Length: 269
Image (cartoon, rainbow, N blue to C red; front, side, top):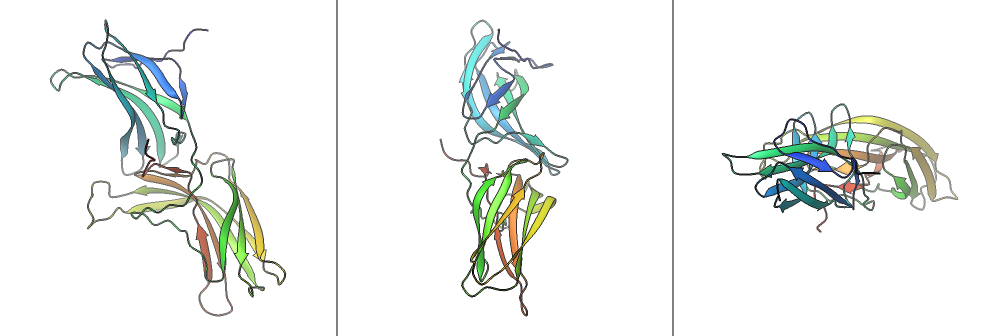
């Protein structure tokens, strides 16, 4: 079977790719046609939100053409998430080529489909965004097994302190879609502002008892939701919130927001 090709339409430079689909952690190979000067080729990540659609470089190289053809190979980091497109936010990829000077610039572009890689589940410590993750006064949440994407699951447990043996704890799992609203402001006096909305929520109730300290909970994530991602201008978060109403005073609350793909501060090569 020969190589599958994909060409960009309506551009001065054209791409011929060895495949239509690519995998994170592998390499992207192809050719650029129509170049007579060195060509800079870049894989970019596209983040779409109600505020704007911005691109961020993922991998790049510069190649010299021979007889108008320039072969290239670019690595695809294994921390790239798969693309997803929703009503308000989306994440995708594209391949871009640029050659020549300002007065004689030639360019080309074509969209890419990249299947996601993997990152270990972790907690966030970003200072520019508020992400719920804290213990309660007399209990806390722990993860036992999670697969943070549509069709996946969240398995966690409530750990109650000794002496906390009556009442109930309501555990809520939800998916939050968030995006930055002040993209043009970039200084410490005006920190980033975020807006969010909930697209899925489910709850379970555990009854406390005198002979137990661990209370398991399980939630199935609906098919069609994206993976957990913290990106530069958007975020897809799976939050776990547990509340216990006391007989008097303020309710006791614990929260966790496990992350899967962190693109706000991507790992170094």
